[in-house]
Length: 371
Image 1 (cartoon, rainbow, N blue to C red):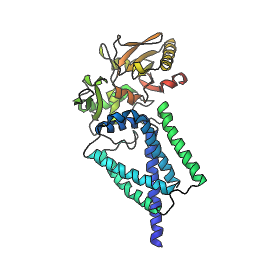
Image 2 (cartoon, one colour):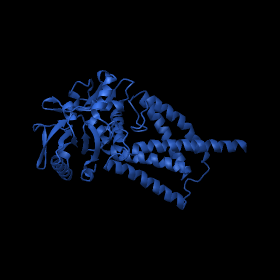
Image 3 (cartoon, rainbow, N blue to C red):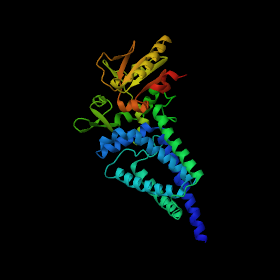
Image 4 (cartoon, rainbow, N blue to C red):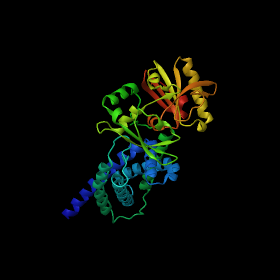
């Protein structure tokens, strides 16, 4: 009797630890589905199944939402017998995957807590190794329960958790992350942050690893080189930085703009007052509706005396400028991964006030932007 009571207490503790881990992990990723999709694409490239990358965003929203939903159901003991099976299966799969990531096919970061907390593959593996026995205990504790015991309250809570989790991911995909864990968050002065990273010695020691999209060749580049910035030829694989400077923090040190005259980073960041930076991934995929929003923004910005520029990893053949409707805007090339780190959207806007990020918006939200 006493041992049975102790086991129930132990199972309760294990359930709460698992639930909190799933909730935190799921939430930090579901608010940034773009980041998880990029990590999924990295795994697909490593395992040689790049043809599945088109579905990475949908899978990202589903995976992160399912993890958050599973944590909520564990926390409130909703469909506990069924969810304990899913928790055990999930922990078993990811324990094996992170072991492979730490040994056979190493990656820089497994992305289990998104951009909020970075763990090495070995740290992630040992974390999963500690959680796996807890999942076994929870599964064993609720093993006698009926799997298909339907109760009205549990069905209602399941629908609420599922709908809320999936909608949260979809909302952040359609707009921007509700919580920004990236280094280019609102309030950050890009020039100052770049200086801090450089003062720590990161620029001289950092190695960028890119894969040639045409030949499959993997090459290492230094920051001073510019060849890797051609997004049509090179795909980012890894960023190796000194242990003192974390890769997510270092990404702001990669901020680099180029035009026909060469490096224009300092010139753009030194723009006094307000600077509107229109971000476009590919001009041939820029919708007419988004282009009209950018045109209205450019007209309004110039009326207030502010500067407007365009940032893009796309090829620029027309004198490094682009016409948004009736307004022609000077354009600068930026690395695709850097732009995606700065703005989690295909197209959108980043506003600087004397080099400090004042606001960011997905293209569909430009008209609603208020300061």
